[in-house]
Image 1 (cartoon, helix red, strand yellow):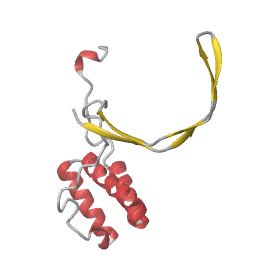
Image 2: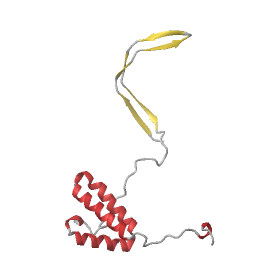
Image 3: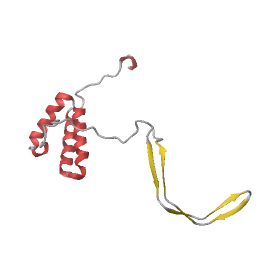
Image 4: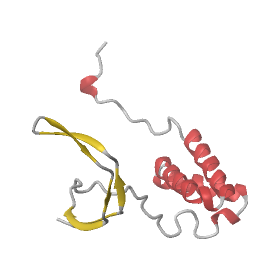
Length: 138
């Protein structure tokens, strides 16, 4: 189990009234010293931060994808969708959209636009059938 270091800052605790042995006792406003200590990690294993896996090298035609013309971009994206499936390509484009959101909003918008075009044009192409055992017989 991993050990975590906890560093607590100095602060002032508010005054309050406590019951001690049936009597009310006033506890004054007190400064609390800073402290550092170690505890074992209580988090559930495998529940770390969700990280988008890195794109494969040359996934969308290599570097400079957004420097190409809009027609070339669409052609690359649609050819890739035919090869590996539209869901994966849409996932790659959405990842690019998120990555570029703050760094280059124009590329982010273009990635979103392309992902919508791919998702819209391939809709209902790949039919996933419902299991036969659950379908009502006529």
